[in-house]
Image 1 (spheres, helix red, strand yellow):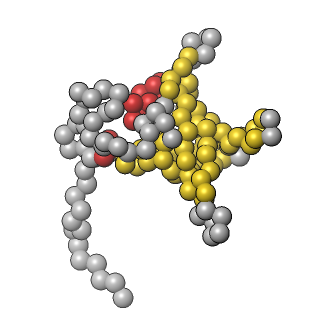
Image 2: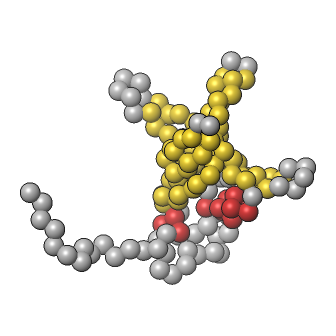
Length: 134
């Protein structure tokens, strides 16, 4: 098994479909910047998230939102093109996107009070102790 962890921006809004047996699969793509000097570019990964988790996270996986995923990597070559796909095991919403406080799929739905961008709890930035750097 080839596991991978990537972080980047969602390329377009996630789509949830059902297989013939009724299983839900949520598909989305992630763009990751290639930071090799002299060869800057973008690497695209096709991601699939199965089951209820995918269904519930689809509303947050919108174009431009920042996300990190871990899962099983597979490489497919089709008509001379190489496709990188990830069967997602873990998802971390990192915030970002076009509008952090309102779901683009449900404009009337606001982020719950006490939660910040990406649906994460707001954290107090004050450090509760003095830290001295040397």
